[in-house]
Image (cartoon, rainbow, N blue to C red):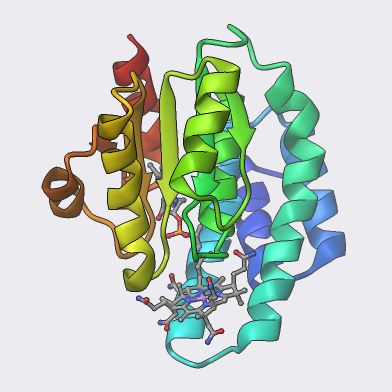
Length: 211
Ligand code: B12
């Protein structure tokens, strides 16, 4: 089976929330030594993007979206051992979380997976993490970067709060943000240190900030 066919299966498995297919395709990708970043960005992530588009067009509903995200989680679990043994382990520590008031986790999880694959120590605060949760975790873990995901226009303000808290505490952490309603313009406006539209770009972004 070609790498393209394996990646197509990975995408399809998420789009059709097919647990059996995601297991076999992820194993095939591991056996074919496709890099973890490619498995996530060009396979699973593409499937999740399509699911998002279908949901937006009301072609599918919430239960299907949840099923698709569970399918993706099965794959991420299988990939975990590869991510933790990533070469150049611990290039730095990144605190990731979905901001306060927001429970969307899939994009943030993809970013965590990509960063782990690139050898970063990633502390995942999960969903609904407050600015102080980010500060406490960053201090405890001696982190260089905090990354907040927001998927709703209403929770973008929580990203601003993180930047303001860093300033108020005169803390040394770089703040990066993402999520569908977030943009470079928004990040400039709130004085963030970085933005990336996709998980593909997050590694380069963090590399630059910790250099
Ligand atoms: C999946 C989903 C859900 C799932 C979440 C499951 C989970 N465990 O995460 C469920 C069904 C639970 C859900 C719930 C809700 N949802 Co919803 N959901 C979505 C959906 C369809 C897809 C989001 C997604 O996972 N995309 C795929 C991932 C891979 O993409 P991503 O998140 O954008 O992440 C990428 C980049 O943005 C970037 N990135 C992400 N985070 C970060 C962080 C950093 C630091 C960086 C650098 C980059 C980065 O990298 C990622 C990978 O490339 C979107 C629609 C859409 N098209 O976005 C709506 C959407 C976000 N939801 C929406 C809403 C309104 C809700 C609810 C309020 C619905 C309700 N009425 O109950 C609740 C939220 C409650 C709450 N308090 O949070 C709206 C938000 C509207 C708005 N603009 O404010 C959307 C846009 C749908 C819509 N068109 O109405 N949702």
